[in-house]
Amino acid sequence: MNPEALYEKLRAVQEPRGFFFNSDKAFVLDLMEGLLVNRERYGYMACPCRLASGNRELDRDIFCPCEYREPDVAEFGACYCGLYVSEDWNVGRIPHETVPERRDPEKLLAALMAGDDES
Image 1 (tube, helix red, strand yellow):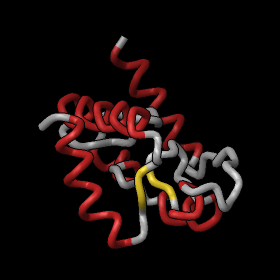
Image 2: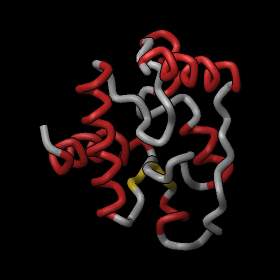
Image 3: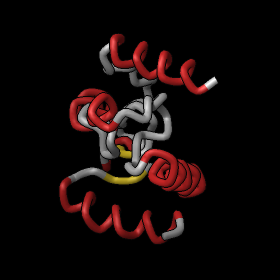
């Protein structure tokens, strides 16, 4: 699968649920490429904007769409990486704010430690 095909596949599933892709399609296609790289690397599509550990159970919360997407979009109009946004965000009806990281610091630390193990 290529980034454009993944884009179309996910768009068809997510838009009816009220989650839209960022209107910057080049940005979105870069993120689609990152998802595909992570699928090849780990066997699952971990969020390309977060550090994955390679441990499926530990990373389950960041399988795209991650478990933080819904609260991020509800509160800020966009998810952490800006892949999924609300319609209001895309058309500029709400401000584009930086979305804070909601992931448990313990999971971030575990992912960092897993990366150290690879060196």
